Image (cartoon, rainbow, N blue to C red; front, side, top):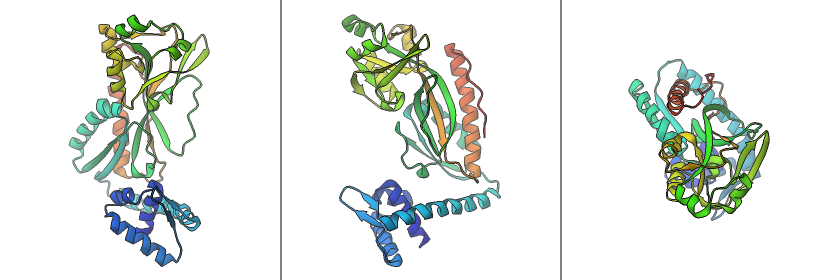
Length: 317
C-alpha cells in the first residue's frame, strides 16, 4: 500500500501516469493497476483522468498534501540511518543548463566518479526549471540579475555558483546592413536573439548613471542553448545578449562586436538549487561540497584568463 501511495505522489507531481511509471521503474499498465487497487482499497476516487491530463480529486489532493509531508519524514529516517555507514555510494540526479553541463559539470562528474566509483549519476540537460524538484537532488539554473534584482520566492536552498557580465553583441556584417543601436530603446527596431531561460524573458535590462532601462526586445529567434544564439549572431542573424566568457574569443578576433558599451549590462548567474533537508544523504552532501569547491576553482581560473574580477568566495553549507 505504501508503494502505491508513493507512486500516486509521483503521478500528481508529474501529471502523467507514464512519466510517473518511468520514474518509479514500472510499466504504465502496472502503474494503472496500482492506482486502481489504491482507490479500491481506500474506497474513494483519487484522480480525475482526461485525454490531456490527470488531476487529483478533493480526496486525492488531501492524500497528496498529507502524505507528501509523511513521505519526506520517511526519507529523512532512511537518510539518517544510511548516513551512519559513512559510505559514499548510490545515485545522484542532477538537472543542469546546457552551458553549465558542457563547461563545468561534465568535467566535475568525470573527476568525481574516479574518486568515488560507487556513485552513479543521472544528468538531465535542460535550460528550463525542473518542475518536479522532488525528482532530482540538484538543479543548476541560469538567470540574469542586476542591482536591486529580487529573486522570486522559493522553498529551495539557493547557492550562487558563477557570475559574470552579459554583453550585447553582433557581427560586423549585421552592423553594416542594419546599423548599431546607440541606446537600449533602439533594440526594438533590431533583430534580437532571445533566450527565455537566460535573461528571464524578452526584457533586457541596462543601467546608466543609476537609471535602469528595461527594453522589451524585438524577438527574432528564441533558443534555449546560448551557443546556438552565438552561432546565429556570428552568421549575421541579429544581436545576442550572452555571457562574456562565451563570446570572449569572438570579440577578441572581431567576429563579434559589442554594442551599447556605455551601459552597464545585467549579470549572468548560474545557481545551484536543492531541497532543504534535515538529513541530506552523505553522497549528496559530499558531492555538493565538491561541486561548489571545484566551480570556484574553475571560475577563478576562467576569470583570470579573461581579465575579469575574481569571483566572490562562497560559503559551503
